Amino acid sequence: MPVHIIDHPYAQHILTRLRDANTASLEFRKGLVRLGRIVGYEIARTFPKRVVKVRTPLGEAEGLVLEDLDKVVIVEVLRAAMPLVEGLLKAFPEAKIGVVAARRREEGGKIGVDVFYSRIPRVDGQVVILADPMLATGTTMAAAIGEVLKSGVPKRLITVSVISTPVGIERVLSSYPTAEVFTVAIDEVLNSDGFIVPGLGDAGDRAFGG
Image (cartoon, rainbow, N blue to C red; front, side, top):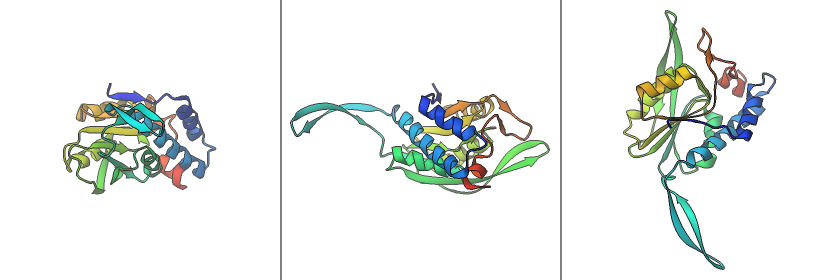
């Protein structure tokens, strides 16, 4: 399935705190870090595995080794994704990091995105994880994916968000059918300004104090 909803009770507990308008910036940032770690572990569950035998101090044990942990590239959409990426790095400490800086544009009642900076490592054969807390219209994520694909052909292309919408998911998957979406929740409504309702507000402003 290309869409994975992280319904772990602890993840949902953290999301509830993030949604609360009374949650202060410090707690909000810490919540994003915790969710990044949880989502990272859920992504790791989908990595190829192989059975190995290891020698312990007292005998032999059978265990699992995850493949591709050394082939991860995390791309963050600045600035809101920074705490989320900090958590993802707890799960993938060997990951290379890329960044995409984009600015939302509204013209004639339509929402677009201008990418004004990107720096992405080569992604050929890599597992690329793109992080943006809110997958609303999907315009920013689609633009970020476009920047990634200028740097090669990844083995897997994964988006990570805290909250997504059906519209955003559809835009990403219709443009990039091989992409996979990991999200903690799906909210159905986008308002006239392109913000998710009920959502959690502007994640960047709430994380960094405006």
